[in-house]
Image 1 (cartoon, rainbow, N blue to C red):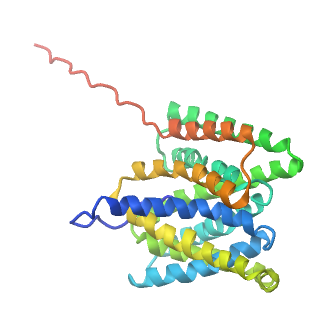
Image 2 (image 1 turned 90 degrees about the vertical axis):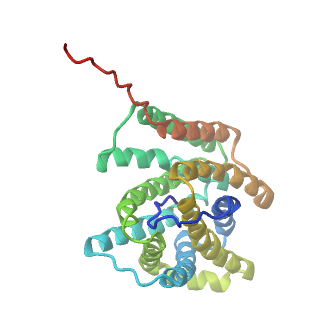
Image 3 (image 1 turned 120 degrees about the vertical axis):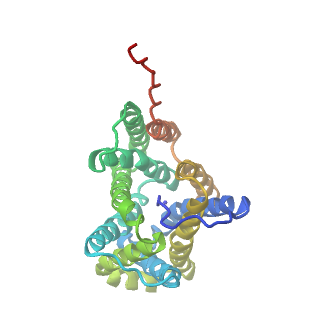
Length: 314
């Protein structure tokens, strides 16, 4: 699941209303399906091998789309940010999420990742000098109270501490994802978003090359359907979903589009029940709802104070 800022100006003529809405729907369904696919592949592929396989496919597909728009020309400082994003967002994020989903169900993982907007707002206040508001503080408290409830709901299962470790790994993914978006913000102000995503995805794949041996061994032992699912992860939730999200962002406001990502957890939960026959524990629903409320509160902007005209002295 990601959030980007449109680097290109909107076209002079707006497309039909249904096209951005369709792009959003495609993005949400593919991102939700990624959690289910990762959970399904946990028995056949280790976290690192699964990450490398997905990124290799995604890098090729994104490269075709990116190079059709010309060669990217980042500066030296921008390359540093791109490398960091590639290692953190595409490398660490995916490995931690893949490992976490071996211990928690897909719906719980999706709910945990959704605390990232609160972390992004907190990091923006610290590093981008954006205002730290009362709403942000309250939202942060609510979101992590929800995370605490999710942790309690998983700790009582048969696997015990392993599920708590899964929650921690998903939170690691949320943290590195949030850091990456802060790094990405100035990049997409100058470079096309598709170029930034492609370069970062390629860097992520390179950083995961130490898992190449395991990927080769596990691919040889895996079923054809599992290999197809890895290709699916690289093509649809990675390459196509990023492209449709960027298209939607060009024709919708960032705030309206950001709210739609709240639909990813419920879509994931439904898919998990249908395709995997599993759902989050009952208390996890309460924790997930509390976390989403915290995100919504943190996104609120304080009302501007009314300006009172002071009469000039006679």
